Length: 144
Ligand code: DQA
Image 1 (cartoon, helix red, strand yellow):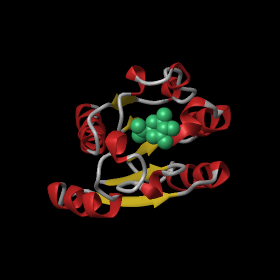
Image 2 (image 1 turned 90 degrees about the vertical axis):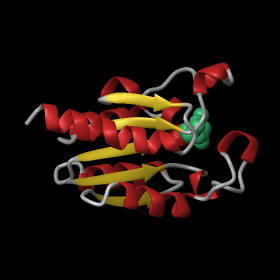
Image 3 (image 1 turned 90 degrees about the horizontal axis):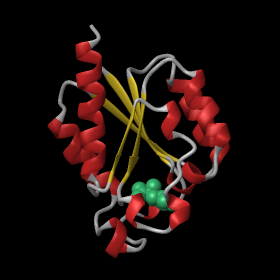
């Protein structure tokens, strides 16, 4: 099983950026933990601050991989192009957020991508990514 994690804008600054909201850990360290928890799953990681590059990556893996875990950052709240892209590919995509966006500013309450995703996980810190992988795994197993 192959899962692609995609992080959007400003998520390269995890551990540095607003640690009271996003925590003190950088993603690369967490990724090592995640890979050790799922030794049978190939977990690839990609980050970009650029909307079109996120779209290119989703198109690149979306017909080949078994699932995508996407934290689109602020593009979640703005990007119809990302919604269209998720709808265009074959594999399921799970939307994740580190913070609980619904307890934050109102502009974060709406997501353009949720409707195109298999599910949404938010508010569990970096653990949101692990929960998303488990969600994709269970979904694929139950649809075998
Ligand atoms: C975020 C929430 C978004 O509203 C914000 O723009 C981010 C991070 C999260 O993981 O909590 O960049 O997606």
